[in-house]
Length: 611
Image (cartoon, rainbow, N blue to C red; front, side, top):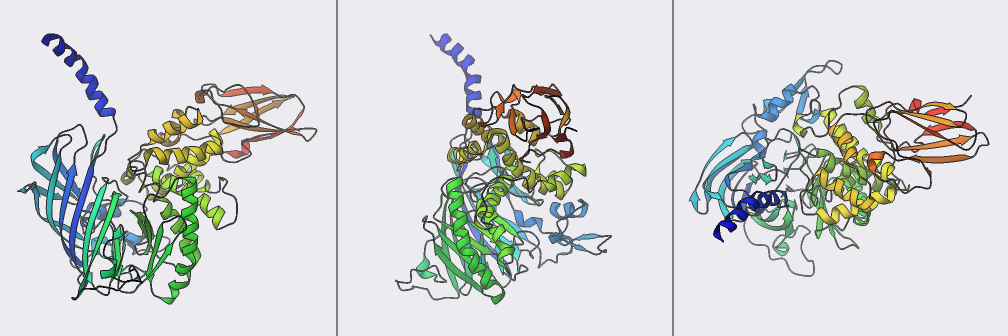
């Protein structure tokens, strides 16, 4: 009997291991931080207790933390990248040449000791015992005294200090709008460990990947500073500044500083901003989410920052209806940073002298609350999923709310993608965000081509299917780290159409779409696939009697077709470059894809007019 049990164990163990490796899991963190801020000198000191739960099937001998502010030092990897990339972010460089012959100089390279950013870990313990660690740029490597077993919780206690850099990218002090402190990426942050292993990437310029957890953060800062950011303020009557219940008395303690106590449940980041001249407005929406707006109390900003508030509620309602209910109780729109950047339960938005200058950014960053902060894709590896999906849904919302148009998907954003292709600088969207050859290829790929993934999906499987898919995707994967395959499988299940070919061609290659009407003879039409990427084809035929008939040719690999009123024809196998079909009447004109939603790079051959 023992021998039989041993044989069964030997046979099944690899299977069980494989099952464990393919079963979804994610790590968990609970942060408790107490931070004292020296606002005059742009420095801070803090303690951090981090309870880390290893939900993986793996034994962990090391852990890694991100120390993002160390990027803002001369000689850092971010600095070196600025000096080598051919089209650096203009916010991060100074042009010491001319407009026609620019010579870019890294602003980081010129930072003085009192202007740099830094994060220094002063001490670190694992379960009360000192542990060795080493700082390598923006990453802290920790060699554990005792390995963390699967299912085990450990507690790390840390003391650290930091200096807020001059505003160069996203975070920093004294922004162009003169916001004192934009505190993003400011604390030692545990790196993500998932089914692919550790994601201890150096901070070069791009975005982030974080561990789900809960944050308990107390900030001690001068009384005249107003703070906004991630989390729910726990002691509003001790703070005031617009957070208090005005029906109750304030209980502000004596001293030069206030202690702001925030709790943030089920997030993967914590961000805040502070300024002594912030105006704070509160909007309690009909949907139940409280919106906070914190912006400079300067007359050039007041009008636009007031006007954007009811529009933000409309955008919130649109996203709730078309994606899913916003899962937290509040969201803060805060003036700060260097443009627009999404964070947990908040965003930093620069500018606001006119409504037009900020409203589109507010819509985009708010949409990130769904496509990044509830659906936490790995932005470094799949930037097209968070930026592209966000661009798609925020564009639809803007069209409906701001332009009083419908929210039909359109090809209005395709132009930059076509330019990218024609310039021959496109790179596959599987490229790591930091390692695109140009910033233009990264941004156009992530934002435009990523958005086009969904816009074209309307063409491939139908608008109503895409609407259902977005809602199902959010429902199934909120508070998780979905991958491209996760979205694809939701889309396949909801539509009944196989889409592996589409994910592969559009995201994993730089193949392009080009279809042509090759010939029309009598009532027979011949179409040609000229480009490498296959697609289902919609054809509009105008007959000599001026009647119109629409045809739909499914791609054989789809193993299905979209709902359509068009006449359905037999499938087109991708390996065959030609496709022929006949009509019932004499033909005047044939057009491929009159919707324009298919990203055909050469539309001049899409129309054939019979002489």
